[in-house]
Length: 367
Figure 1 (tube, rainbow, N blue to C red):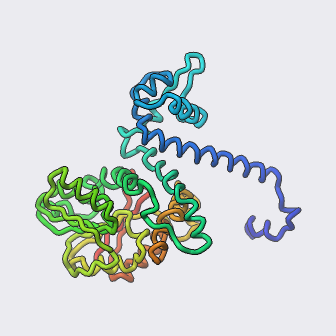
Figure 2 (cartoon, rainbow, N blue to C red):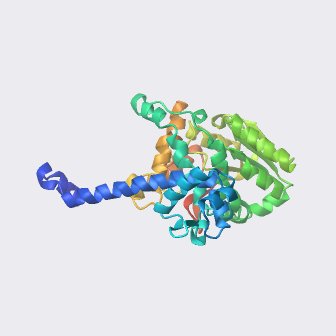
Figure 3 (tube, rainbow, N blue to C red):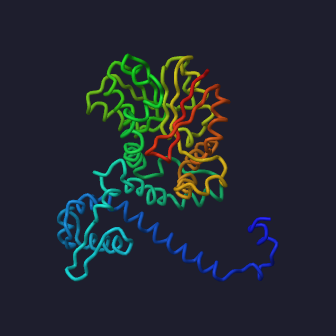
């Protein structure tokens, strides 16, 4: 009998452990402070305070505010939170503040792709729709993409670290011979392309191949087209399209999805459309969150709580808002393989990159 089963069989009076209760309260207070630190970390990133401080020796609030071109009073209060949160060091005698290089290595734009402050932005972003999510708990509906401020901006920056920064050197080489095929000339489709940073990069890198990106968001596609125009890229095409209705047959040599399947309204239809649009000898490269479909197997996941929270507040909710399946961020490797088989794929290989324990890369073919 497990400890949990034993405790269930005990009376309420017998099972109450005061020390355990107090330890749990302490844990909650730590979590409360941790959440607050992430909000202030997001602000430090967006305002450029971390970037400004990384180039300064111990400085006063006035000097830091001047370097970042910000209001001193707000900077002073932010610094106080960063000091008690253990992010910034403070010397009370000369009233200076200092961002250690060991901390800057995880908090500045220069630190990308290791800049955790980029991900911290999602805490206040998803919290902004708490009222709508609470209503959804009651009525079973969801929160649409349009309700999330700055989503595509933050997501583009995040994917810039997780996907774009390693795409040509690490991700594409996971598929044997793919780089050579791209150099020679193939047709590529990115499903759920978002702001198009991935496709714009590979289009510039492999000018002989042809690239397309589909996304349902007009805002995201506008960003993608603007970037392509800025760089003078002519071998890429972006289109506003419901990717659950691809209606293309055997057209592409390579189809990619980057963190784009689990929040679809109808992911099974998306995967079936991808299978139909892929040539018989083509490859489908799918990047998605590394994790299990079973919650008990995610107990030791380093950011499991964060991912289930993002799922509740965004990924599952935006799917349900479209009368979708609400698959969720943590649909997991087991469910992914099952759905890929049902879509018509017979060969599925899962790989990971040494520097990226948070993502799975599925190498998928029809047979």
